[in-house]
Image (cartoon, rainbow, N blue to C red; front, side, top):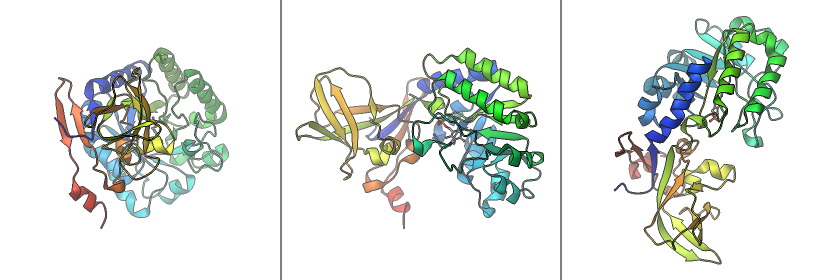
Length: 365
Ligand SMILES: *Cc1c(COP(=O)(O)O)cnc(C)c1O
């Protein structure tokens, strides 16, 4: 028995997403790069890199991780590079995508023999949250002025556009891509590759995969470009759980259960977006507010139904715990960091990483 708390990555669930990604690659000609900012748990890269072409990154460390642990095609992107990062970024990447014309110009000489791209900001997006909206007012994420971009087109061979956010609506994807074509069509004609970024939830149930593939292929044919997709969430959705145990139960007008984990430390993304954690649906009559063990008053995973009253020692499992979760775990309150376990394709569960007091100590000095 592995001691809770731990994240459990189930490779057979991961495979469901990866097979859809492979289908899209086959039927659209697009290449698929894992967005490491969403998920960087490299012990399952040996499975993922059989179905995906490589990785994309947000920083020097991510690009190195992608190159060293995933392999394949490695795209480097960052909102801004520091001068002393450039050599290592270039030596660990196949392409570099600059966020601004000014960064492109600053590193023009250093990167002259590298494949270069620029991030476009189409000023239209599908985000429900201002904090995550790349097209928010005054956004720093990419260039939007076609005239200015045309002035540096000789320095680049591709574009990256990331404006889909948790978008499971093919019609919306299609219409936003149409707007991009209308506005930037002349520029798209002049490059060899276009990355359409992440945020397209095409591995979800009932997504019209064939229509999606046809749309990607038509785009690729129209501009004679290699299309890239950068799935983060879509690659790992519903593959992982956070396994916890009940440490205490209380009644304060509601039944409360305190578990050996913390939403702030171990599922921080949910707290940022004010979303409850998800548990396997259960219809039982016993209602509990499940809380974390940090001292943050609002460290609450959510309210869930159970078929029996919860007892100390009971095991609970939060589902869909891979994306933007493991990459954001932290040592708040010194709460023991969840271990990482992998359910292999043969069903065997393997503990691949445990964190201890030493890791806590080494995080600061
Ligand atoms: C965040 C991000 C992704 C991945 O987004 P998901 O929503 O996890 O698919 C891909 N590309 C870029 C540039 C990003 O910023």
